[in-house]
Amino acid sequence: MIDSNSSQKIVVLGTGGTIAGHSTLVNDNIGYAAGHIGIETLTQGVPGLAQHLQGQILVFEQLAQIDSKDMDFAIWKSLASRVAMLLVEPDVQGIVITHGTDTLEETAFFLHSVVGSDKPIVLTCAMRPASALSPDGPQNILDALSVVMDANARGVVVVCAGVVHAAEHVQKMHPYRLDAFSSGEAGPLAWIEEGRVRWSFNAKPKRALIRNALTLPETESWPQVEIVLNHVGANGKVVDALLIAGVEGLVVACTGNGTVSNGLMASLQRAMAMGVKVVRSTRCALGRVISISDALVPDSKGLSPVKARVALLLALMK
Ligand code: ASP
Image 1 (spheres, rainbow, N blue to C red):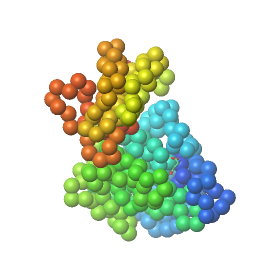
Image 2 (tube, helix red, strand yellow):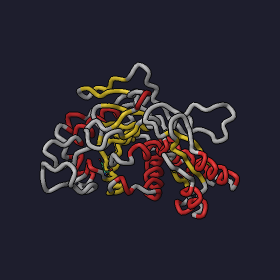
Image 3 (cartoon, helix red, strand yellow):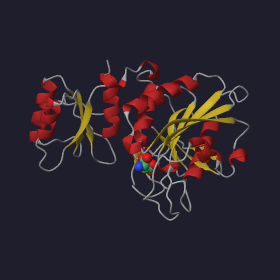
């Protein structure tokens, strides 16, 4: 638990996204430029911000200013090491990260895998730009701060539309609605109601550390890990092309319970024989691959294809 007397700083890291987006038309919720407004201006402009805090000082850092469809390894590495360094400062109570919604779940799971801390790291976002008639970002920022200030919050979580999601389970499920995220069958960790966090009965906020953010190698040497899809007519030619391109890991977004066409399976077996690590996930939105005990290709242990890719990427790092 955080000692509220010694932890009085909340760091707000901006990376861009729709939450910092701007359009010249207030009724334009899609034709805007993401990553436009600086993190300090964005946060300080939230109505009721001062009253919402419990005496904490907000500190702002603009770590990136991008549309998260363009998130890359270099930003991931600097974000992860900055977060890890901030968290060991005794007066930092927790961190809020503003991020675009498109790849939010990947960044959340990456940070969850490389930052081991009992302090909260809360990613938040918006589906409407800051210039909208009724933007959702300001409430999401206040909600993210509520989670950081909650004594039970720890590890990496995502806050959107009043719901707190675990990094392992959160997925963007809708391209337009304000409550665009879901934790699927796992359900939310918590809800934020009038600034109070109501934890789910089953919530187990946790920390995870697969790899230390401060010892990540230079991004040029990060392994090439790609996602391939099983679908009608999948014949494995894409795998053969990736082998020529030097791929080191493959996640298969399989049909159903981890099924793969014969043609795709033959090329995956060729890949495995060449030393490429292959993991099966499912393209189904809910559930997980339930493997037979002697399955040729291991399953992703419930991780979605994009998160299984992050896990494989980290596992393959030298
Ligand atoms: N394309 C935007 C982004 O991911 C979408 C959003 O933030 O909602 O940055």
